[in-house]
Amino acid sequence: MKYRFIFFLLLVPALAFSQQAKVKKALPEKKNSHLPYACIFEDGAYPATVIQRNSISKDSTFFARIPVEIEGCLVLAIRFPKGSKFLQDTLQINDIDDLGNSIIQGKNGNYYVIQAKYEPL
Image (cartoon, rainbow, N blue to C red; front, side):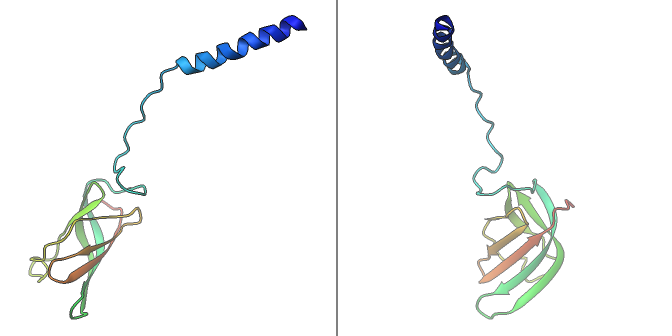
């Protein structure tokens, strides 16, 4: 019994040392690690519902299924139809959440509420 106890006392530190000697691999950096949530959108164009709201005049315009450009889970551009008066609006880049929601402010007093679908164009 005494030898078993001594063997056990010698075994515990040896096991602890063997665990410390293992080199831990660095975890790979997550894509879009700057975001507080998981992002499912890869870089590319996605169809989206876009509601434009003018903060000054309180007017709204609804666009169904127009392309939005997403890169690194940031909405970079909205592809408005030809002839749209919103083509000239300069947009601030904004992130998009895992559900496809984003709100972007334009320089002409417009806000764009985006609901993108995960269906690459």
